Structures are given as structure tokens and as C-alpha cells.
View 1: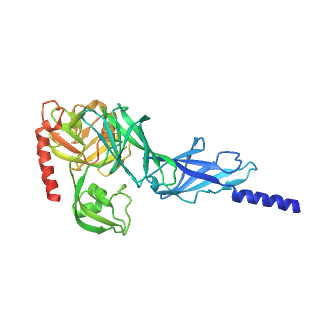
View 2 (view 1 turned 60 degrees about the horizontal axis):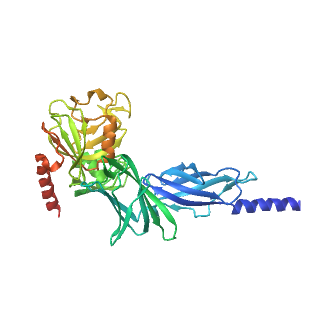
View 3 (view 1 turned 90 degrees about the vertical axis):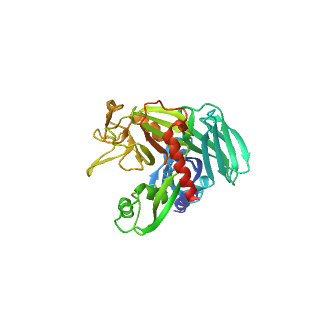
Length: 412
């Protein structure tokens, strides 16, 4: 009996002290890689579960003690590790602390990505309290400068077209070197954030509203005569459906100022041009509305949706349905009647066929969505001239810039 008790105590000691080392290895703009090492003889790879602000998720094994999961903009996660030792016993627990602080890898780092339109060189301004060790894009080293305001990464190397990965190696206060990555996007040599950045804007606050039980953002916006997109932007609402009773909302309107990306739609030629810092990047064929259903003028991109659903006279038509004519992307314009979107009828591109929206091939609208900033101006014109290399050669754009200057003067 005494021998059996001794063996049982040994198993208890193993279960109590055997645990897993859990460390954050890499943080990207969309996901996190963890290193999970068992401190015992494991009979199989541990299963890694995480509890975060939105509930439970499971990390996927990537190889070499690495586990990955989609970030979802989490500030923290609680790892729950389940392993088995060589005796077939289930082993729980971590020795790295109950909570992993993901925010520490993001809160002190901000980047600004700018392409020089003259030579297409790339500058990345990095503001951080950490020490920046190095930076690469698509695996190629960038030149690193230390400045009084942070760091600058520079390269004249040609970037891969479409998706790019910017990786920064930083030194944490603990001395550990970690990698943080950002998704970028290159179109004809011009590089931006993937799906764009935020165009600068000025806001006018007119009221404060306490959300009542059962209210929707659309109902609140209608009550005050503003757009739902205005409320999303002013209140930093990532999901307009996630408002709750008792929530305090600022009510107001948003006016975007001048950013880096601009769009010009020519109704006369059924063409759309995208510009970066005033320089022509690419021209796309489009389908436009019958007659002048979208009048010439200036609009702004207020919202961007991936795989949008269609609501047609109260009927819900799911994303990617053959009868959902919005295609794979939808860019909502400041006039809610209009938008730029894909299509399920590519043979109609180049024709006057829509009810007022601008239709594009799905691949083209996905490129546009990936490149332009939220808040980009959309200038709708009628002209039989080709798009100029410089947007300032379009008379309507000069008038728009003058209005923007006046607006900025009023807000200062």
C-alpha cells in the first residue's frame, strides 16, 4: 500500500508542475503566432485554445512549436493549453502568466507609408518607444535611419505587384527581439496600406445620444439627419451592428480633406482612373448608369465592404449569390444612392446599364478596394479627353481643391 501511495504522489507532482511555456513570437496586422513548449515529455502536440474578448478560439499548429490564430484586433488573450505526457495523463497550465498582452506589441508602434510619386521609392515612418532593429519588405532589407521623431525605413527596390509584407524587428524592454508585420499593397509601383489608410477629416459634433434598447445605428442617424457612416467614423465603430443600450454616441458629420488617393470617373468614356499624390496610377473600364443617373460632382468613399449582401426592396440577397449584382466588393459613396462595386454580369462592363452605381470587373474592384484610402474623393466628370498624367490638369479637380482649402480654413 505504501508503494502505491508513493507512485500516486509522484503523478500528482508531475501534473502540478508540468506545464507549457507560451510566448508571443510574431504579431502581424491580421494574426498572431505563439510559441508553445511543453515542460514535460509529451506524447503528442498540445492543443492550444484561447479565450479573448469575443469568446473562445483555437490556434492552428504551424510546426516547430508554433501556433497561429487570427488576431481580430484583440488586446489580450488567455491561453488554455491541453497536453498529454508519456504516461497518457492530461496536462494543463502555462508558466508564462494567465494573460498574454497583445496590445504591448501595437500600442507603441505606428507607421506611415508614403510612395514618392517621382521615383516610386518607398518611405515608412515608424513612431515607437521600442528600439527598431531592422525592416524588410517582401523579405528585402530596407535602409534604416534614426531620427528625432522615430525611425525612417527607405528603399528604391521595386516591390512585388499587389500584396506586400512589411516586417519590423523590434527590441522589447525585456531584451527579446520580436517581429511585427503589416500588409501593404502595390499597384504599378505605388505602395499603400492594404485596403488603404484613413484620409484626414474634420468633424462637426451637433449632439450626444444615449442608445436606447432596440435602436439601430441607421435609426439614430435618420433621427438626426446624418449618415450612418458619419457616426461610425466619429465614434470609431468597427461594426455598426454592435451598439448597445446605454452607449453614448457623438452625433455629427464628417468632411474629408485631401489625402493621397483619388478616383476620377468619366461618364462620357465609361472609364475610372485612380491617382496617388496626384499622379495617374491606373485606368479601369466600368459600366455606368443610364442617362445621367449619377450626376457629375464630388463624392467620397465612406465605407468599404468585402462580399456585400444586397438589400433589394426589403429582400435580403446573400453575398456571392448569382442574383446579387454587387459582386465581391462595394465602396459606398457619400451620396447613399451610389457606390462603386463588382458585378455578376461582366459582359456589361463598358455599357450604360446600371441604375446609377459604377460597376467594375470583380478583380478590378478588388484591386481598387485594396489600394484606395477610406475617405478618398471620387470626382465624376464628363469629358472625351484622356485622363491626364497629373490630376491637377482636370479643371473640376482644381475647383474641388479650392473648396477643400476653404473648409480647412473654416475649421482651423
